[in-house]
Amino acid sequence: MTLRHFFYGAGLLIIAFAIYFNSLPNGFNLDDNAIIKDNPLVTNLKNIPKIFVSNYWANTPYEKGVLLYRPIPVLTLAVDNFIWEGKPYGFHFTNVLINAVNIVLLFYVLIFMFGDALKPRYAALAALLFALHPVHTEAVNMIVGRTELLAAFFSFLAIIFYLRKNIAGALILFFCALLSKEIAVTIPVMLFLYELYSKKKIEIKNYFFFALVLGVYLGLRYFVLHGLSSIHQEGILAGQDIWARAATVIYVIGLYLKLLFAPFYLTADYSDYTLPASLLSFKVILSLTAILLLLAIAWKHREKKWILTFGILWFFITILPVSNIISIGALLGERFMYVPSAAFALIIAALFVYWKNIFVRSILVAVCTLICIVFGIYTFNRNFDWKDSFTLFAAAEKNQPNNPRVNYFMGLKAETDKDIAKAIKYYEMTVKEFPTNNWKPDSNTVNNMKARIKELGGIAVNKLESESIALYNTGLKLYKEKKYKESLEKLKKAVELNTFYADAYVVIGGIYVERQDPKNAIEYFEKALKVNPNHPEAKENLKRVREYYKIK
Image (cartoon, rainbow, N blue to C red; front, top):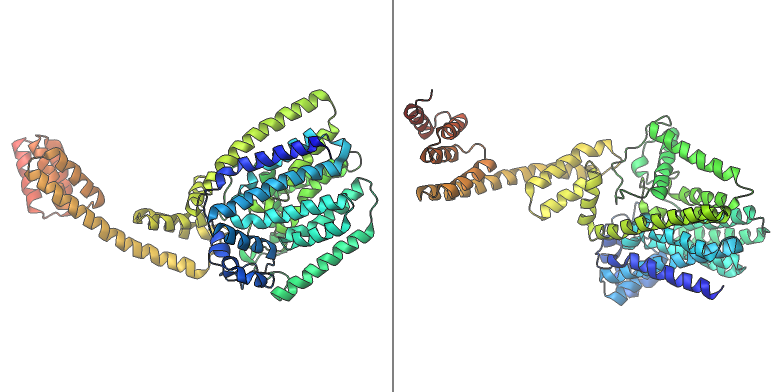
């Protein structure tokens, strides 16, 4: 390692921190509240020993349904809570810091893996693309996304230690990565593929030790959770046969590829993505084509351009745990892309290694610089969407107006704002859309929503009637004071709220009579009679206007 490497690393650290600096004022979002605010394992340091013998979802509504063992992220949250006294900005600061360190670690992973074949400036540019990638905004902004950040932190360190021949250190770090998130199980696989394709000597005993560490982890997990996985938690995939499940897995991997290479129109929720019905659906065939194309490229270049092969395989291997081969209860999550998206940096690094032509490299540098600018702007702006849960779902609504879960939360927001009409609209959209999407709320949620629509409907009617009466009384008073312009404004608002308000129509007709506007006067007297055919004033005034102006 040289001083140049240090300066590149320092520069990456500063940029990575700067791009997420505007996330510090954000609050708690989504699962943050359950895992942090309402969790005694986090809010009381005396419970730290219990963290290591508890479900990740302990003390939350999901404790019985989901089996996850991730004590290290919970431990860091407890320490954060103590240091920052429960203030969200402190938790966000830690996430931003861990992410920034991860960028530097990835830079060193590239340096140690590819040595002299990859110049430091190109490794730095590849790491910078990873730092600015918009798909990471969920993992960094959502505080409980720390599981992804810590899994990457320990995994990258484990790879560096392994490459530096510190096997004991690599095994300890691998164990820490497993205690952060299950995706770390793929790291020994990636190290094996690296040694295989780079023609380095494969020490089988090292992988025996990795297997031993994995066995200890699984034993500990089983002891704490009384099970290894939440296989009963089928979630959105409940009832799918093997072919439908295969179609879903292919489709999901295709969606992750889209997020890797075109990370735009991001959202915190993907419940409006309908599940494929069969392997022959268009979106499955399109996804399968992209998958096979990349795998064909990897196979073709496995000998002479193995770094490219390694980068492609990194994506496919690390994405498998979240691809729903075994249901994870969520169709898709941008946070799940944190470790797999390192493939983007690996592929870019491979291009710099194998495209030796100065002109071609210059073009590649220019393209990567442009991508960095676009990614950076998008990532920085996306951070603002994570201000709070309602801001997040309002951003999602722009791209997903038919998303049932988004509409549900927007309905809750409208209720909070006392906008009853808007709340009813969102709830009705939710009830209408959820059966055709992959969001599967429990029956109580749906039934309660339907009951709430009826309840809000009654409240809305009463509220509108009260407001229209108040406007009518004000308008009538102004009419008697011959303030016709002001009176007309109030009365028209009254009939907007209550289209069956015959008395208001009559007074509006009277104002047009005073203005010598028989056409509009007749129109409003007729509206009053349409609502109440026996309204005496409307009948009499209509007759007089027609006689006076000789209108039939």
